[in-house]
Image (cartoon, rainbow, N blue to C red; front, side, top):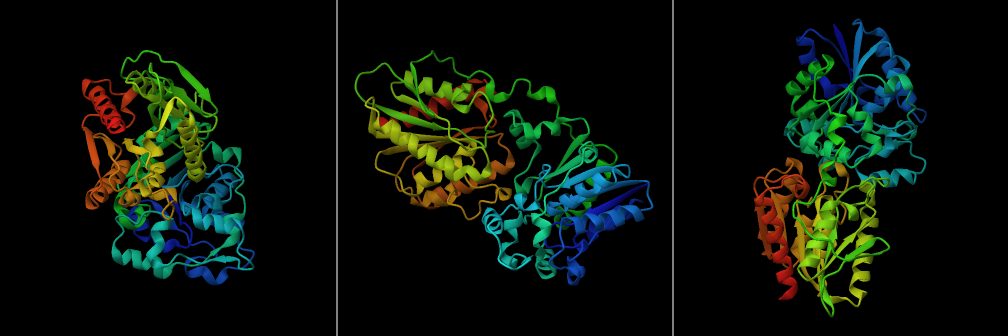
Length: 499
């Protein structure tokens, strides 16, 4: 017999787990939907001293009272922090930890660091005066805490009505992870509607982020649910089933062997001869055989890419291949190593790209009045500034399998990096979009949002569809269809540069 201890996230109480707990009990399991001190109907117990340790002690009492010999701790959002803290104190009682649509924190991380709303996180990091409580979001802003996709209207209204202020100390006190907690079996429940998926996780692991290597250990499993950040409200039956399977040790496992040859380091799909290449700071110029200033195409890589990743993106086969191919066609191919290492780095990366463009335009071998910008993958968000107010020298903007609106769990809802909104300012700027048919659903949704907005405002959009291609197809899908897609896109971009 298993006891599930269900730990709610910020501003909520045990009530949020009621439906899931009922279904677990129907299966014969023991289920405890916990309301932490100062939350839910215990809000009157909150005080300036209520902190993460207070909530860890709450869970220890529940674990110690559980009848079942095995306890599965289930944390959602902030609830993962007290769950992991308690697991480290009672590792002999905890059979598994389940993280519901939440990134596992590192030792010493306060929960504040994982608040999705970047604007709120920055305000809290700079202090809140004498107030020791964080008010819950207004009813219309719960999506800033995570996608509310799939949550019925009455459940969303209840979420807002029953929300309680969160004691600041619960968010600022660092989590201390014991070695024992780090070795416990763990399951991640990823919610596609909030921007999480196994495919996206595998892509990030392939980039070599050492923070993710532990996710490939045999003790770690994953499930996906096609819903937003609140599956206990939107899909309680499905979540209960996933929890039962997780307790039984089921779930998808990531194989370390998958990442011995990362997809992004495989050869480029076109056989392109070497070209002269010059490196200036973060910028590489692939040079054509031509006299006089030539048009240039600046390729902007995706991300976030771990800072320690080697080789860096401008040396990845895809970007070297594009740079050489453009140079072979008579233009200057430019690749840039911008510093998008984390989701909080988009401002810095945007400045890196702007600086690189100015360097390129000032080069005497480049016709500074004929430049195209080409964005790939997560670099797509960096296209927003250029779409919103295109300079006269920008003759074309291209995007290949791009992310064109922030994913719901990125916390960038109010940022300027929203190409799907910025396209309304593009005027007659030619836009060449390469759209892959086998895209990750969470990314495909941003592309469709962009296409709809572009069509509504009459933007000069050309869409090149590649039905049987994946995200990053240049080193994965070596077919005639994908080769022609690259040739087609380059022809279109260079055509706009030369017209």
